[in-house]
Image 1: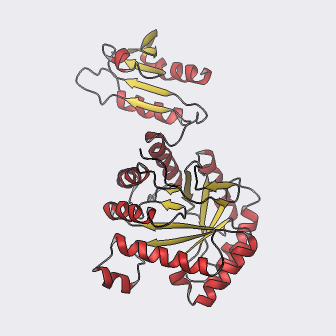
Image 2 (image 1 turned 90 degrees about the horizontal axis):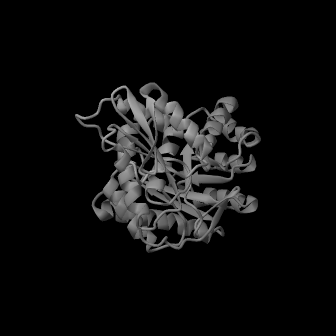
Length: 351
């Protein structure tokens, strides 16, 4: 991976992004924000699973006012997602939003954008300028012959320059597309033209399965070039899945420590254990140990398993009705098949 792109630091509540800070993981609630108990419960679940920053939709004044109460119960920065109504942006800030996400193009006149900027500056609240392929201005579409990476970058930089000209430079930029290749190209272009921190994601990526694949390809290609300061994996499903996938993407690139990596063999004709189910159970089990930084192997063959698991800190290899508990490639004990998972968890808890 290339050296991280140099970007300015921006504080969002107690989390700082940019510079050499760790890449922060974000998600977005799918509850009605004004339903405070449901929203708080979802945010706490996201926190537990490793979410660093959370965003909530603010479609009405009740949602904006809910921010003040929501903040009393959560422990991560709260971002207001604003569309069209500049008064909602101001209300969200006044009720404690740690950041707002706007597209100045749909806020209205420059006077309205200025009012939002003035409020954010007064409260020290950063602004994320969000542009995506579905909201690109018609003149840029015509200029570039369609929705393009170049158009996305131009739009985002123009909007960021507008806000900076209004007296506020605590900015984050997001340029998202559901087209993976376009998203990669857009981030490569913008990384060369500004030091504003970048919020990276593949928008409208899809269901958990397909969306995870698109996000892994797109975010992986972008992050591997040293580009990106905070990420969101956008999935149609439980937001907790977004956080889990984001963590796995960062860990696979060596950009996030902690948490247990599970490696498992793809199975073959020698497999005499329900390895698929066992691997899924192990993956679920280890999610409870986010404070540990180890590798766990789940192998389906007692013949090759110990050797294949040598690079793991601990692992299991199944056979017919029984299996092996392995540490660094060495067999520790032989166990009945139905005791393998419990034995593995017992050893992990001690590590």
